[in-house]
Image 1 (tube, rainbow, N blue to C red):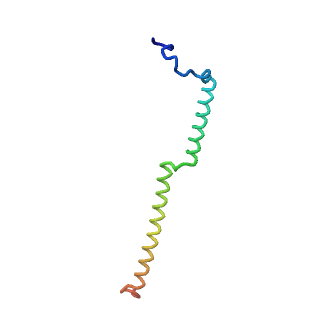
Image 2 (cartoon, rainbow, N blue to C red):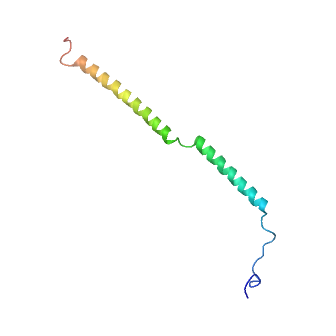
Length: 88
């Protein structure tokens, strides 16, 4: 025999399944949680690519300025202690 009567020993659900309202409420909760998680991640997550590039540019400029100052100090030291010291 086929159909629902073919397996009389199959467990029947205890009651009706979830109502349409329960399903819609569950989806709404999941949607709100997803939107909230996305907003939180956008606000506190890693910086965007533009922000990362800007930070990298700032670090490069600071490193260049530091190297320039160090080079200037070395040049000043060489000027004071070189073989041409005291010559015009």
